[in-house]
Image (cartoon, rainbow, N blue to C red; front, top):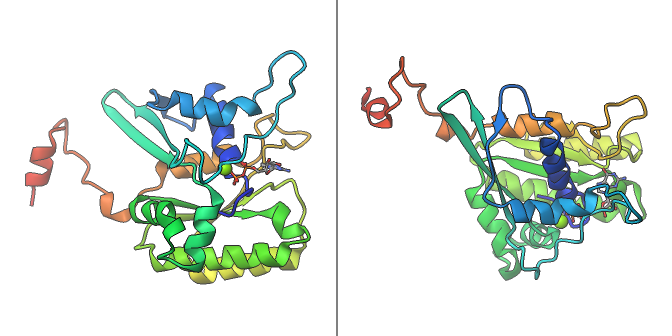
Length: 242
Ligand SMILES: Nc1nc2c(ncn2[C@@H]2O[C@H](COP(=O)(O)OP(=O)(O)O)[C@@H](O)[C@H]2O)c(=O)[nH]1
Ligand SMILES: [Mg+2]
């Protein structure tokens, strides 16, 4: 969740490209996607192709585009019989702005859907906007959004994600946004990401793999199932245990 132009689609596209390069966290193995065309749509403009076309950022996710609601799927395997499926939303920022101001706004239908169904939230703070001429409005946007999210959270995990970490912002602005978000969502975990690698880095941007790892392992508390005992993998018997 985050305002428009905050770097949400870029984050998803960067993850997809990193997965394609084998930058998968630890013991997980990529095991397919039902939305490869969708992933290609968000990532293709970020790719470097030989020739005259330079990589660029993904096109704006408009609230009228046919990609909306933009659900992107990934499956991972761990071991032989453990598979996890993830569905990520690529939603337009306009939805969240409307929702932050008025939970029942007709134009916030998609944001309400995401808030109700998501297991994990990424709340995106755009450092470029917070450093720019509209910084006051950017600060208000993220504060309102954090408060709205807090109202509907029901204990689900949240990450506060600073995008465009390559852009410097005044320390007091950063601290003010951080404390406003943490006041609303005290258990939020913080990450900073950028598609720009540090000069001595690994060429994988900054913070992207760490955040992906957090996302893949984060769990909504109510969905934690008991581990199967021994080699008994039949859910019927797991639920039968008192
Ligand atoms: N400096 C910098 N700019 C970025 C980065 N990621 C995205 N941007 C800029 O932010 C713009 C909007 O990104 P986009 O992913 O479309 O934002 P969305 O509206 O939240 O999906 C891009 O066109 C880039 O100009 C980053 O890591 N560093
Ligand atoms: Mg977008």
